[in-house]
Picture 1 (spheres, rainbow, N blue to C red):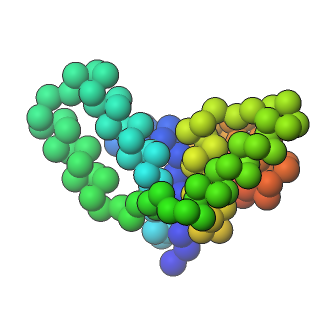
Picture 2 (tube, rainbow, N blue to C red):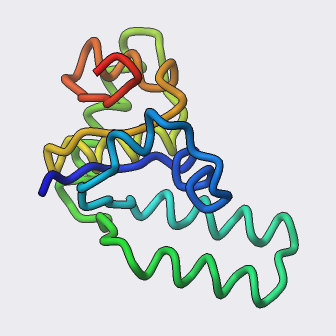
Length: 135
């Protein structure tokens, strides 16, 4: 069984049952990991959108069925390295995308995202592996 990390955008479309075929192709037969930041972003969305208790329970149950990459000192060091290098290049990246990339790199797992442009710099410069419609 292969392991993959999914970005928050993929988590969202999976829960809505609107994921494109290319996402399902990468997830079929794989152990699907979330990052701690994806759990945080999904929780924020539930709060901002005033989800009721039943919707929040469905989200919690969905999260509970997936392993979560936690924050740890190596993830934090990776984040600092990635953020610092991007800033030096004049291409600072959004903090949450950098956290997702740091988790992925720490555990050497490919990332499935629909927002490939958000991670292009990390792919080109840091060895981030994205699973896209082309692979």
